[in-house]
Length: 398
Picture 1 (tube, rainbow, N blue to C red):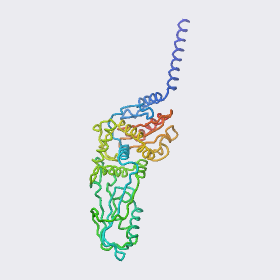
Picture 2 (picture 1 turned 90 degrees about the vertical axis):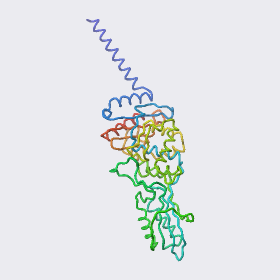
Picture 3 (picture 1 turned 180 degrees about the vertical axis):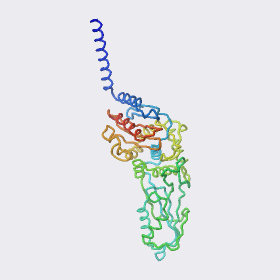
Picture 4 (picture 1 turned 120 degrees about the vertical axis):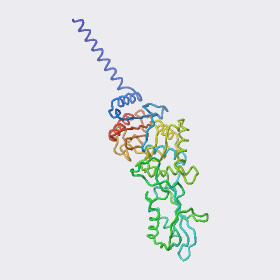
């Protein structure tokens, strides 16, 4: 009996030591093995994934290799991470110095402080154009010596087609109005223009309004300009859908066609995707903001676009400052606080009914730069999905 007891004692002792050895080796695994093990454990144990789907990809930019992949080629609705596709394609095509412009022209002559002619305003699909810009236009009219307008206020909205919505938008969403001439994001241009002229001391004498191109002899009086960096800040930090759609049509207009159509922007997105070595035919692009239910991308596509942007300073220098910072600002202001991801993760969020997504950049504990994308689809609790994604980000960074 003593021999059996001794044998059992040594057997248990050996098993205990082996278990401790395994535990220690798991804790002391180098990065990325430690992250991979912990992500495997999280994905295998989180009840969220019992009733919903996940696509996830983490890419080590420094080593130029994928370090974690889970259903990364599944096509899913991206929600507002679609704005990354729009932003990267637009920066690639338009460049970081691109300006959004709204132009004011006039025709006719000024006699005795009266302009007998027309004011032409050419819309440039600028969501940042506001009453201050309109007042600047009025100031330029007054600088001509004009205190009376006898003629017309003419708008030119030929930049884009006349569709006021995006393909696949839900009728009951809070959708933006897609017009080339907006004031403060609202379709009230003529109303606000006449108000600004009147308040600026210009009498409107028998003034008519209509839509038409300015003639060749029209004189450029003023041009209101806003930079692509200004647009990207609101578009990405606050996930502004109107700003994203306006950038989408800037991209479409650069195709050279008038009126510009969403299909022109899609063609450029597909060209870029094919350049990455992916098959654009495997995805579906519908709009610039991610509001559409017809968008279908994969975490792999988003990750490879982020990788492309990182390798292109002319894109990355404008994209990175626009992304929300975990625990600090934008749509990530309240997330990941008091974790290794706070102040580290810079990423675009996405939210639609049943969809929570996140894609962007982070720095690993070993100093390697990462890009990543994850989409949780079929989720009924947005809070639980965001908490899951926050844990993934913390594991990437710790």
